[in-house]
Length: 418
Image 1: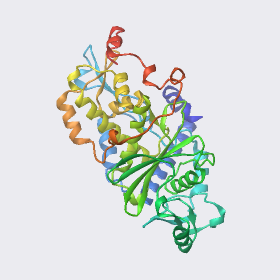
Image 2 (image 1 turned 30 degrees about the vertical axis):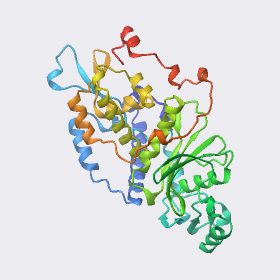
Image 3 (image 1 turned 180 degrees about the horizontal axis):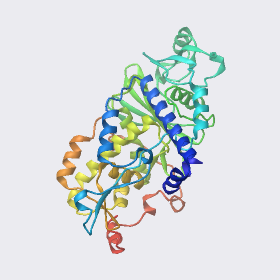
Image 4 (image 1 turned 120 degrees about the horizontal axis):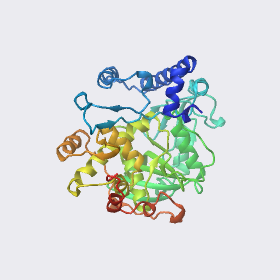
């Protein structure tokens, strides 16, 4: 596939084949157009797009067509120095990774017509963003999809929903199925096994597809666990978002899909769900990462979280003197690749004479902490009552017990603390 072409091969193709270059540019243009259309459909205006692109072109003197290629930036006054200190540019994440131009156009054709106009969930009514293959019993085109916020059952008419809640929904079951594993003030988290609550989890995926473009729907939800975040009041538990993850991931993913319902966005719940996934990874004594490739909304949520979390961690560990990437990964449960990506994005990872170093002075970290603060609401680990699934540590390469021991032994091997 085109996604498997290395940067070196991409450069060769770009230099040797004009046709291949034009195809790649067409694909990139199509991806850019789709991203802009999704932003406009959600009312998101990228005011800084033109400014950021112009400033990056001035600061990074490189060809736009090779923007995906990892490059190094060397200050002009250091070009003649024997010991060159360079910063490795962060590689941009691509939500369309693995899709060629034909696949993108096919996806565009299938999903360009919405079949659901609005979704009524509790007291909120939301405009649907994307096509969703809802059950045919509801009709091919649904103006308003009524959803019971406690059971996630679908109804075509409001009268059916009210009759169902009045007759078949007792007041002591106005909450998601499964186990409540977290409660702090008015926030509650439920863990739901896809094997035990298939209908609820399938309907949850249907709702997510209405607001996520590149979400794959599987009717087999048995291998997944679903974590539903709720606001609690006297009427019951009202879902505001969720995330799912595989019960066991061969590649170390601790999150498969995440969504905060549009009516509850801009409240910090997306960040809370991400933080909760890493708290579970800490309980499991593993490192984790979200499923790749991430969507544009996923990137908007994860980049600020990684940035603020790693800056806060480095600021609290600034008196340690030295810290390896692996040690950071063990203590935060963030996978080493994501830590490196974030350090590159912040410009803290330096490359000196073939060795990588984290250049993080306290003054710089304090400035970054003000720019990227850790925001509320936060997960209180003392309120989490949860026991992880038992797995064989010997075959689980993402367990922290299978990682390299400590920074002292790494320094003995001469890795420069990386």
